[in-house]
Length: 311
Image 1 (tube, one colour):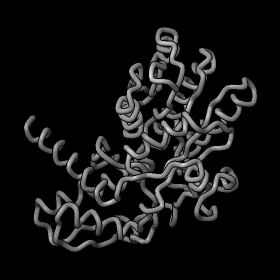
Image 2 (image 1 turned 60 degrees about the horizontal axis):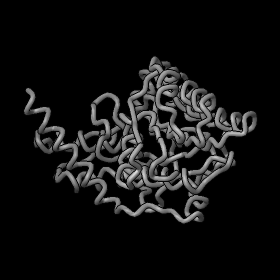
Image 3 (image 1 turned 45 degrees about the vertical axis):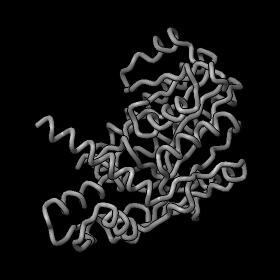
Image 4 (image 1 turned 180 degrees about the vertical axis):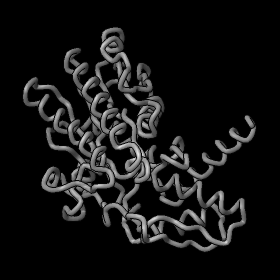
């Protein structure tokens, strides 16, 4: 990309899409635009009018374990339709390059850790998010198929669990960091003596701060070209859910006890990415994990203030 390139971020209303668009704007890409995108958006008309040269595909609904269990069909259909529309339009309108942001949910439940791209599609998926994961896998395969059939430069990145300012903090659909921030903040305000969390707390996850992820996506758009997907992880941000809860308790300033409800599923017991291919290219995240959690909590407090002011 050059700074005058026409760049489109599909799904700029998502956490990852907003981070990519913000990184583009920070680095002086003057013709970078983004939009919200849903399964019924007029994608073909948009491409005909704007003729983007580079496309970041970060659209599609997502959610935590609860959302995946309640809305598996919605999540699957939305992601399938959006990715098909955008990838097809990108091929038809001769986009120079497309980066599709997949999900670490694409990896089999029992694959070796840390997860390497060679393990993709080698075994059953985690059942708690299987429908969503299958849709994200379809996007990965469609990019590969388009490269093979049309010779286009469509690449796939698989990030660790993203979090940061702009996240969804709703009680029903949030991912784990946003959910913990809200729950521990509300417990502090209510002066609750303890907070009960789902699972055993022993599940291990890897996280990446959304602004770092945005920078990684720009780096890959400029530096990477292969049919092989590439992981985007942060080795310094690997923790168990119990460890994460303690970190967020400290950031929020909640003095109470944390308990775990073992009736609920942990999901995959370990979900860690092998990101050596990316680090070998010369990129690694720079934001300290606790500082990133603090920045996310600060954003949450600002949004809470807006909600209160509108009541």
